[in-house]
Every structure is written in structure tokens, then in C-alpha cells.
Image (cartoon, rainbow, N blue to C red; front, side):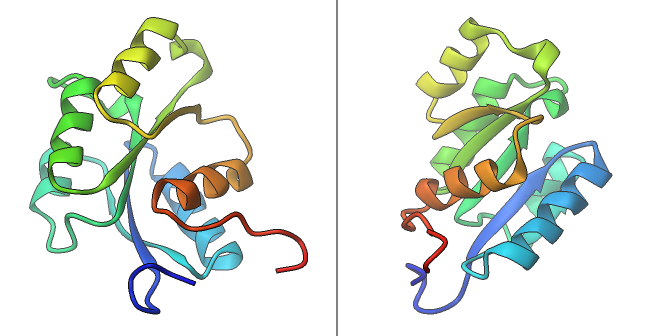
Amino acid sequence: MSLSGGRPERVAVLSQDEAYSAGLREWFRAHDPELAVVLESTRWGDLLQAADFPPELVLLDAATSGRSSVASRVRTVRASGAAVIVLSRADEEDAAAAQLALSSGAFSVLPKSVPLGLIGEVARAAVGLGVVTAED
């Protein structure tokens, strides 16, 4: 059951890869009614100024960092009360950068190449929902 009184936990996606964002939105819509992508943005400023911000969770594409660092963006999102999962490309995988994101408050750092189901499981954990099993 959702922690938000029966409504789905709201998720925002910040990524310049609109196809990836759409894929995440559709995956959640089809596979997890307790999580709903309510905000997709390709620009940091637009995300922060959106009427649906802050959601319960932000999926932050590390490749969309622009002028501010991923760690700075994680801290800003966390200050709003939302959980953060940082998504990175495999060629950007860097233990120091991942550690910095985690020490800045990210719930997790995942490669964008992992199966969407794994992102979904980590997203559920980030907002305090239980793991869904095949019997659920």
C-alpha cells in the first residue's frame, strides 16, 4: 500500500534522453501502480519550477548535470524532502563520483543500463514501499 494515503508515490525524471524518460514512465505505468511518473524534465531549472515539484522521488540522470554538479543537485532535491536515485551511463561509472552522490544524500546510484525492473525495485525502497513478489 502507498504511504500517500492510497494515491501513488509521485516520481519525477530528469534526463535529456526523452526516450529513456518515456520508457521509465511507461514501465511504472504498466508494472507498478504505487509509483507514478508525474513529471519529466530535460532541464534542471524546469524541474525545480514545475508545479508537481517536489515529488516523493526524483530519478536524476547524471548526464543531465550541466553547470551544477550531480552532488549539488542531489543536495537540492533532498532539501525539498524528495528521495533521489542517480542514474549514470556505464562509461560514466566512477566509484568516487558515485560515492560523492551517495554522501550527498542519494538513496542509490545505478547504471542506466540495468533492467527497468531493478530501477523499480530500488525506487520502491527509496520511498518506503515494500518489495513486490510474484505472489503479490
